[in-house]
Image (tube, rainbow, N blue to C red; front, side, top):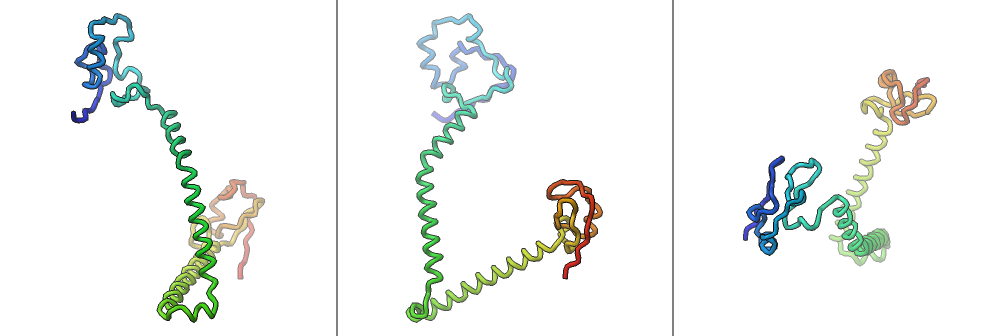
Length: 194
């Protein structure tokens, strides 16, 4: 039987004693009790009466899916796989350490055993790594010198009493509180860098 969706309308009255309102998988359970009449308030429900009520798939009606149920299932799944994940992370860490150690252990004797083509590849890889390191260092040095507010001018002003050094002269005049620690700025001291 194809999957059917259940979309109740808010405020509509639904009599739960009628088998026509039941899902096919629920009708056969209800047929045994079809002759019973329910007069109490539990037999009639108003769909959508409570705005916090969540509508669930009818086959899951017996198991209420609540945030705590979902949290518990996630916790169980994390616990189930956490030891495997830890072991794999440790293995990966060990392999990375071994690779790092082996990468820098090449001696002249070992280099003579490696093919010329492999040595060229290793040299180009090392040069690429050095270039990336140089670019990163230059970017960080420039970033550390530039104003943390406008990112365009060079840092020139120290805020007092916190002593944070992060602003150019133009931006320092426009702030009342230190952007890092939120202290009220009592004094601004201009610094001259060479």
